[in-house]
Length: 200
Image (cartoon, rainbow, N blue to C red; front, side, top):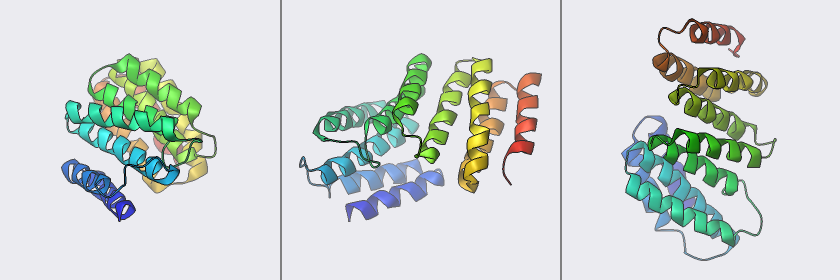
């Protein structure tokens, strides 16, 4: 039941209905026993970090902070990292939280740490983290770092051939990168080249 509720949170989020996603996470958390067994701790940690990111999106910093603290405490109960919840997943959530607070250097540091912790086979996660790191640089007006980081994502997208990830990357370039540097010829040229290089 909790897993089902957790999956129900992802669809509204992808449609921009973040309050619905946060509500689904909170409902799922009520169904997860507060025990220290690996499965419960992993699921609870994943729900809390997802909830923290949804709350951060909604500028509910108090709730996001509480969820981050609760999820970090669960890391001590995991004998080994799992794909559902581990240090990298927590660091990603902490980076998103810092980004929404405008703590751009901290956000970039968290995303870098998360990338270092994420195993190479988890390629989709690495793509999302790289985009997040580029976003932190862009919001910090570090144009060259943002472009260099964003550029490393293109070969990964070519290999994965994921329409969802490619669309996510394209929206970042169009809506955020160009939005932050609207009359920058270097950024415009980068986005134009990326459009040719990305898988179709």
